[in-house]
Each structure stands twice: as structure tokens, then as C-alpha cells.
Length: 240
Image 1 (cartoon, rainbow, N blue to C red):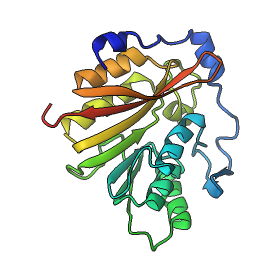
Image 2 (cartoon, rainbow, N blue to C red; image 1 turned 90 degrees about the horizontal axis):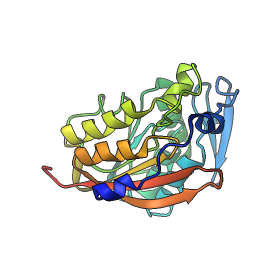
Image 3 (cartoon, rainbow, N blue to C red; image 1 turned 90 degrees about the vertical axis):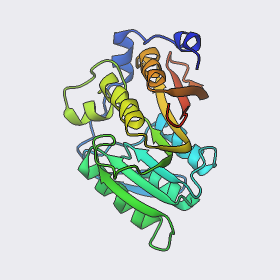
């Protein structure tokens, strides 16, 4: 995206509207289940259920629109592990299933082993990691996906909800900074990143540009409630 295009991204919605649209559910600390694409996932307490924005990523991996076949794929904020499962079934070479929350990584590994099985040639690497801090040195990632907790207004004091919903720009800025400074993308690598106008889109994508990333709008969804959700595809030239 050219700076003039970044400037045309919508500003955040009014604070009251953002808070009203992101009121947390009350069942987070209970054992739940989740169904998608004919698969049943176990969801332990404190692990979040995927929403419609996460399914934007899941469906595109399933359809090969986000192509992980034979590639090294990092599923950031993996949660209960849907994208890891899909990537394993689509034939990724390696899936780094990362989350700052240990119970989420454990749930992702459990669901992967149960639904993908031991005969898959895909290597699963479960990682309890604050963004890329716990990654192995220079993993050379071909594909990275991230649906960050970028909501710009606090919607709860529960640390589990903050971690999953409204950590804001410090997380997204650190994501792009670490990815660039550690030179983690392989040549031709792609980052698929979800954010909406409940977040500071211009500042987030502007910081990505400052880190050497070029953003393209891969998909835009209008939810007819004022929210515009962008799925960005970002690339970065080697040595930039």
C-alpha cells in the first residue's frame, strides 16, 4: 500500500460502538465444544472460540487461497488449533502453532493429534511463545497468519479477554517489528493479517510499512453494522 492508500483506510469507530460490538461472552471459563467443516473441537476453559474473522483465515487455508502446501507455516495466536488442523490436512511441511497462552497451545496440539492423526507428513511444532520470542532461530517462514487482539478500546478487565480481544497496538507493532528485525520470512514469504476499524488501522499498517512490509487488501468484509474487516496480505523484500 502506498502511504496515500494507508491514509484512506477508515478511522476507528466511536469508542462506545467498539465496546458495544465486543462485549465478551460469559462462558470463557467453562468447557465447551466447537464445530466447523464437519470437525468437532474440544475447547477447554480460558481458550477462545474462533469467531467469523478467524474463519476468514480457516476457510482460505482449506481452499488453498492461503496456500500452505509444502510450506513452513506459522499460526500465530493459534487458540484451539483450527488453522493448524487445516494446514496439516492440506499438506504443510511444518506448522508452528504458537500462542502466548499455554492452555491454548495444549488444546491446539490435542485437537491436531486427534483430527489430523499420526500418519500426516506435516511436522507440528507447538510453541508457547509471546509472539516470536519462543521461536527457534531463523525458522524461515513461508506463510504467517495472525488475527490479533487489536481492538483499540478496553472491553474487560479479565486478562484472558484482554489477551484475546483488546491488547491493541502494542501487540501488532511488536508483531511486525519482530518479524522484520529477526528476518523471519523466507524469500517470497507471505503474512495474512486480519484487522478492522475497531482497531487503529492506519497506524497498524503504517507501522508495518515502516518495518519494510508492503500491504495489499486481500479481502474486505462489510458486516453491515459499521465494522469493516480487512484481510491484508503483506510481503517484504529480502534485506529491506
